[in-house]
Length: 195
Ligand code: MN
Image (tube, rainbow, N blue to C red; front, side):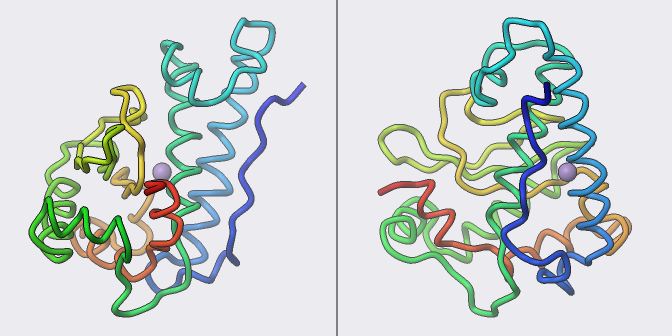
């Protein structure tokens, strides 16, 4: 019995072009994420983790179960936070106020976020999260880790595994990360912030 399904993208596979190509979406969502889903479903069968939520598995499992569940959770948040490119795209409301208050400005936040993404050695994810009081924090998480493992609420993430950008940007990780700003759906990110 399959426990988890591949998430359905909230946009067409070419909708994020030219920032993320249809080809990259095809591999990243259709092959990589599908692979994590298949691996977890195979690993989870007949174990006490069957029927648990992804978040619970990510906070309690180990080894391959943890890695595959983490990658599913991370990619669901990642693919779910984008929309068609929109110049001048920026957060509003309480999230924008918190970003300004903590980082000085939206531009200073973007610079710090990209710097942490560029500086992450190897495969992983850069995250904007909030603690229970709404305080924002940028973290680098290696491999399949997710900030919920630290008790944080994940808001926004850029995937810095090479599979996320190599077809479109080759080794130019900084260019890819900077380009992602125009496709962030800040309404989704703000809803995760919940303030
Ligand atoms: Mn990925």
